[in-house]
Length: 332
Image (tube, rainbow, N blue to C red; front, side, top):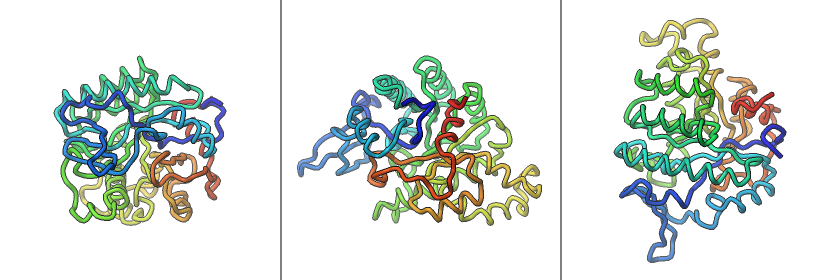
């Protein structure tokens, strides 16, 4: 079954690639077994323990395809592991890693192109290099999307990013934004986030919400009307704090004039895309109330600890597969 006729399309599926180990020099990544027998994934000074990548669907394409079938998923867009964005390390190492990663990921999806596609890893600390790598990934490797984290040395609304957004639009691919745990190779987050995996549960939500607000208030969506951006996990808490964001867009002096019309705020946020990996049908319903169903897509965080065992259609009856085809430029 191909992307064109897939019934369930998963756009939130990370991959870990053997060929990338050591591709960022001293920053890794590296996978090893600790003295107590626990698997360890090292990225710079950051260590993730007790996640078994090797021998799992993260790294084994045949096992991924088997598990996809078991879960009722017809097609997946494979994306970089958020732990390996490397947006803050020196540019030469990041560029080398992204090239190696994209070559390896293109090779992985080529093993089963009817069921897998790829999104490019990009060295966002060097915007010119990120543009060049995205062009190579799309034109030479056949990748279908760009994939970045929300946190980098410059903001998502930095004027320097406009050239990147223009390149994404010119290449006619979507841009996916997904957080990484704070402090891997960038600024540390709150110490409270280091407990109970709150850096993933609460920290990701905060990063996604800030990303949406930055794209909106920073005028990115307004300046680039042809740009399609998809935010993970329903855009964080944006549906919940919609009222406060909308009120600020009308009342605060820094809010741009194009946000002050009666329906301007809703129109701008309605141009973003959102995956519905949210674990709560009521949260999905609230998001639908805010943005409708036409820009919602299915995401599973496939093979992750929080991935569902089986696909379950959302109660909001969103046309998820058709939406994904439009987002990935595969609609008729």
